Length: 433
Image (cartoon, rainbow, N blue to C red; front, top):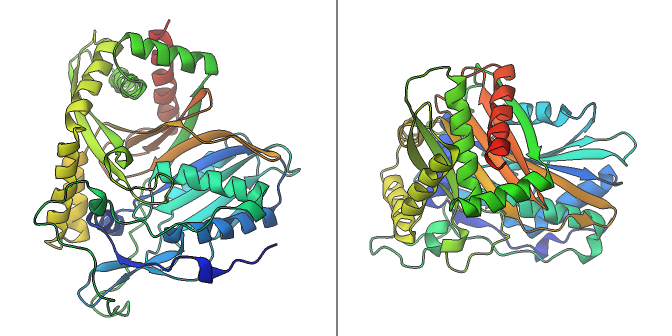
């Protein structure tokens, strides 16, 4: 196993950007980490994976950090020497990984301890059958898109560790990548701070364990159905993402068993990378924001009409000037030093939803890595603390579209969660016939 020369890695010490700080504060009041699962086929050993994690950690600076608080009680990313934790469990069934993801999401990070990432391998006993690699990250350092590239890097390092890529530079906060900075924006370049010991009036507070269980279910569309859905969306002048939002909104309406019209809200995660300047598309970093759309669903609401409504509302909110305004609003808000509880309450007020769809879209990453093949990406899986916790992760890999649904038991039973998922897929399948 080649040794890792940490002197070649870029040292990390920078303050959290405004939205990284928002996610950090949210996490202190209610856990806000997420998991992405890669289903892989092929032979590899646990030592190979451990070596690959070490190489990936060297490449991506934010995989080596903890969060420290300076004397002004402002958070910074600070590099530490801890390795990425790896838990290996024997694969017991096709759904085993879903139970492991439920445990991962229910287990909070200690943000004062590095690293802010951990990995679970659900490993087949003979090493030749399917295995699942679960990567869980604190949301202040990463989003779902960036973790897909991390998974790619891990698999590349398993296949060809001697040809692994060079270390990347420390990713800046997304506010620093906005093409036109607001005049009042304050530079985040500060002198080296003095960090407080985590004791006394400011100490690490682990979020209280939630008294409800989380249910994870998954599904996929065949290559033929995926292609038909893409084609039909073009004909209907809408997007695949909007159609998925419409399908889950209609499935929720059907599950409510009411003939009355229903007002439902859908939140969509937005990838900011195409709007920012000089952004490394493959960094492990946080470059996402959320937008809500509002819909009145009647008993005769058509999926394609609903999808066009979703797309129209998202197009209006995704104009670059509105997205940048949202970024600067976050900066202004953080300048008031809100408490974790205030951040959580504002999050609930502004982003409360009946369903949230985080669509990683079509992943432009390879699937074959030596003897290892990437067969599916499931997720992201996350809980945000809103009242109607229904979160759908979507990813298209190769020619197939994959869904992952996480629900709180306070919203529905496990059987109802599975039914909701199946109903949404059924509605999509029927709509393209």
